Image 1: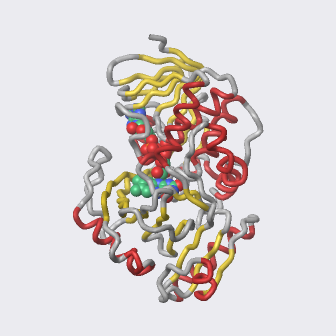
Image 2 (image 1 turned 120 degrees about the vertical axis):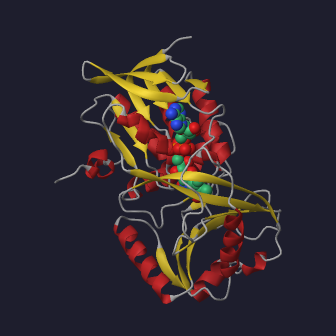
Image 3 (image 1 turned 180 degrees about the vertical axis):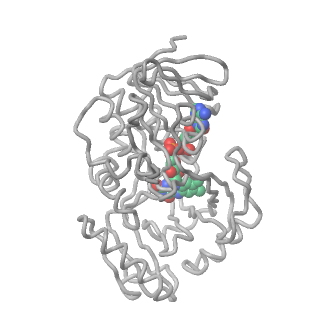
Length: 377
Ligand SMILES: Cc1cc2nc3c(=O)[nH]c(=O)nc-3n(C[C@H](O)[C@H](O)[C@H](O)COP(=O)(O)OP(=O)(O)OC[C@H]3O[C@@H](n4cnc5c(N)ncnc54)[C@H](O)[C@@H]3O)c2cc1C
């Protein structure tokens, strides 16, 4: 087995797979090491499928907007798989005045960066989506947001990257990085195998923190658990992604009619942080349902057919780290997606490939550097 490549990617989530695809497309030799036996086992196949710009931190907006303008519309065609991308818009809903205040601030910051998003009143909300609760008093409306199928998207990048020559090894857990003459060089796995590359992209979600510590780099991140549920198929109602000002729930109707909603409990974290524990706590689904009823009461008789959960890698300031590392040349960090990494996954993959080959990046990534966390004391 060949254990060398120009670029070694640690982690086979949407970020690792997208980076592998865009690198392979540029003729770069890529090897992806994935700890799990299956590709896309992490958040990338467990998420709510939201592909949105509205409500994002201004540091994320430039590449979130790039992805929606230039990558998502042609992704199915480019990858040869229908990733079920729908650009039906996003309503971020408000039930009370304090919610309107949150949405107003978000809309103002985003429009300053050129995003088409506006605050609308309850009447306009119901004109756009008559299926929502009469209690809704307003929302932000972003017509270019949407949703897609997370598992199909992640595996589509994987499939196309492989077709272009990228190699993948699953069941190969990375435990250590090593430098040689001051540069990143080796990736050591639990099985004792040593892989060598000129560049290492660390895209292992929360586990990136332990791995980067082996070369003296710490990325302040914590684990946060959320649950998704899927209903039985409903008659076609709307193609819009729904969110709420308080970020309690988000969801959409899928191609086959089911609704998928994601949420936490709204209470203290219901699980001890442990990314290997994927069981759904009893509290989560009922809390999720109660919250959905506040916004979409007409789903009150829809049966929940399945639920699942996943862990998010949340950085200290809730914005990803997409960054070279001054102390370890050749190491690129791509983690801490902070619950937003599916919609931005294609753009992050593209950015990483551009960083490797020295192409002009699609946007300035300075605000996403890891050294923003360095102590100044
Ligand atoms: C319930 C839920 C709902 C969400 N909803 C949305 C949404 O609507 N929209 C949105 O944009 N985002 C959403 N997200 C967030 C999104 O899923 C993530 O930000 C995104 O999938 C991160 O992709 P990733 O490739 O960085 O990480 P992951 O998908 O977690 O991939 C990391 C990979 O690294 C592997 N790995 C870990 N340790 C090692 C190791 N030591 N060696 C080798 N491999 C390793 C893991 O097995 C995993 O496959 C949601 C997340 C959850 C959990």
